[in-house]
Image (tube, rainbow over all chains, first blue to last red; front, side):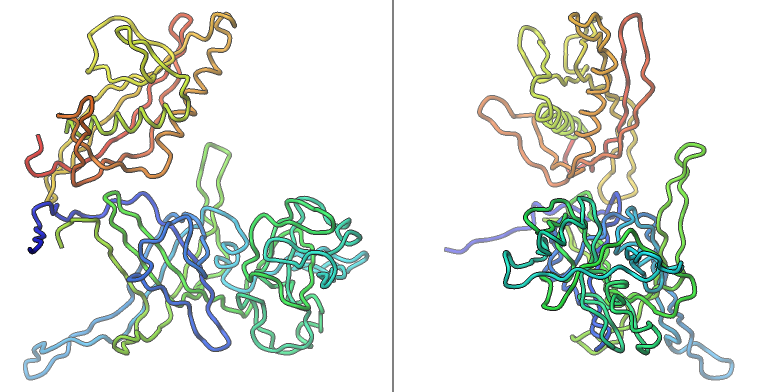
Length: 332
Length: 168
């Protein structure tokens, strides 16, 4: 006995209709130049509110605009010249968008360069644009009480008294002379020499993206609102308090990230744009959205240039992958 | 088009009822969730309060796609006199509550629902799922107006659906 499947129920395919675009971030291993690849064949139908690890939700974005800078020229031969073929003389792709939220990651990506945590300054610290000399960091306790996790930091009851609900914290290793990319989880700055950063023991925490918000303090343990991006703190990491974030026009570092943008279609179809390597192509900028005079909503405006990767299937050098997942029982 | 209208109404009624099960209305002696479609009820000059009344207004059909895209404007009217115990002085709060319920129901994800055919549905007979989804834009809340002691508002929302092959 055989089973026959027919296409009788197939509905004609229509153009996707979408409300907005959701953005996701994943780190690029800058030291070895390896991005995070997204496989739409395996994971394309993921829950938009729960992206698969290591992708991090950046929230909705507006003004999402893709531009193709690829140039195709005619290849001519003969007299008079006749086009006999075509050749790509230049391949380029850019993306611009506006983030709907001002989270640490969004501010960092839109800043175009490294982003600094404004660490709480020590008493009498000389004023400095990106924050003066910071207070001493607080060590994470080991062997005493609960072990620290991605969402709870055991600093001990004495040190915990220096924190309060709502405190912002940066968790990372001490700077001990490392050169090159620094920042746990995500490469957040490039150190050219120890003297350039003044040998500052807090320098890695000053630039790290491994930050969180304290929402409860219990028996010397700081409970965070969400998991630290870099996961469970490694041995030797310390905690610094911060008051906010700062970026600079003119700094030398280029942020690079793996990006995924998703348009969910109203019919259950889905369009995914995956840029394995994006680098900021402009300095920090904002877009004003007039609410009602004199109120304006300020969105983070970002513009990015795509860098190439090799497709493992055929070795082609490409900048972006656009995937389309049709709705169920649609004509193709 | 009727399938899309029925589907949108059932979606909105169920979402509003889930948000506030206590919002009910008595229609022809039967207690129902407080959402109804005017054209499905007996013509009457009586205006129910503390309930949502749907009216279907403008209609556009775009035949440029393989499936005609139907755009329908749904007008949702609601009014309140406040409660007698508060001598009507809570009518602003009650209207705000209805605003919030409607905004939540229409703003909740997903902003789509599978189109259903209710033509043969009834007691013990489930509606038939069709091949496309009904979807809608963000609601536009009109100005609150006062008529005597009554506070009311009309909100409109554009509802979209594809006209499937053989569908009337």
